[in-house]
Image 1 (cartoon, rainbow, N blue to C red):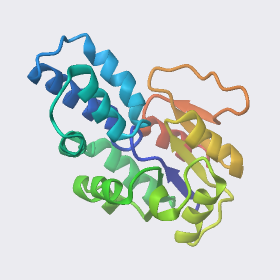
Image 2: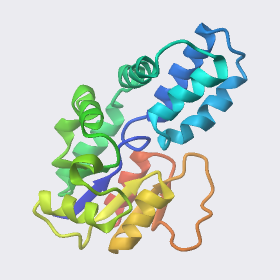
Image 3: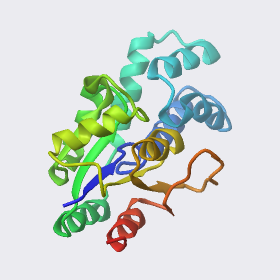
Length: 215
């Protein structure tokens, strides 16, 4: 029974789409021009930036009197409310499990926030376990977080695959522990020269299919 490691945001759940939807609505509400959406997306840095930095950026650019903590709560709550588990993603995970794979999420982020995503969307029902960087005390691409995932599943990393959208955190992390990987390109080109994914796919459904076909 091999281990199937999966990233969470923009792999199993569409975090980018949820943020874009909120950002579009927020800018409309405060009367900002529509083209400022690209600026706000760049500040968010595809979820890599701190929500506090996003809040402070908004306060400074638009001279908002809204307390930063209220903006942070709004962003986090709005993203959570807009996230949905695709039935096709759920089906792909179920098929992988039926085929003998053990799905475990490995994600960077705050424990409370990431666990809420897992439970509120129902994604937790399709996973054997998960590891979140805050509670693990280590972040992807550090090899230790992948070792923790294997320990929790009571399995070895040998024969495992990693599916994720981050070149460094997911694919670099997989390369660091010697496991095969599928990179979700999301319309991007691979430019990293130090390592490369074993396979490339447009989305998680195709990625799971690649893994299943590898056996």
